[in-house]
Length: 313
Image (cartoon, rainbow, N blue to C red; front, side):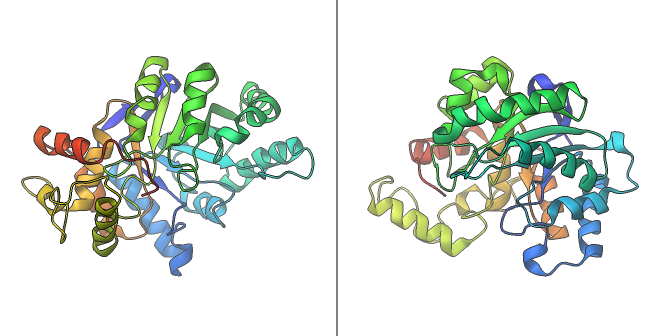
């Protein structure tokens, strides 16, 4: 496993990290039992993964992760958890965040959380997050309950991820870590956000880089066809069937592996999340990041093809 420094936090994090959200929701949406969840976490540790991501909104993921890491030496892993306020609050929720931090500490079975994030902070609610909730996180950090302070984006409703862009342009000194989406089909972060993260030493956690369309051949073909119809891609730019199959050669085992390699290749990226509940897929993803880059010609072709497209994908 390769390791990178997570921005100004100084944390040495594994290039592959494990997330307990997404469509799998730590196996909760697939009926995985506790022994299977424990097996995933223990295999992560064996592979050298030392960063685990969760959130209060991921079903029972926080409590499940707390049970799965019980007995593992605390200095062998780092934790990220997140708290989301309602977008149409009926009243002040500051107390909810204070309680949320305490509840996360109890649920995860720890006295500190390395990274605590405001979850899904969009540009519309950015000022509210900074004014009302950031001071609470600062106090929690002063008390030693949390370490780094961060935010995550909502790429499903905010494809440009403007919440991250605002944070990096307006007051990057506030945010130690940002979780965003950057990948083959989602390259918009490379234009401004990732260079700004490097400039201000903000750690970037890359989420869902190969989650939605890359693993689904039919959906990938459909997406490419739609983008051709919209004029985003030239009609002859990619084949109708297996449009990204040309990436699979040499040390690239699959289109998904290519997705992980591309997602890790930018120097701003400290770690790439995987949320698989399949042990074989976990090992494949880890293997892909043993050499976290595509050859330069393939990488440039991907930038030329998709670098200008800003859509949820």
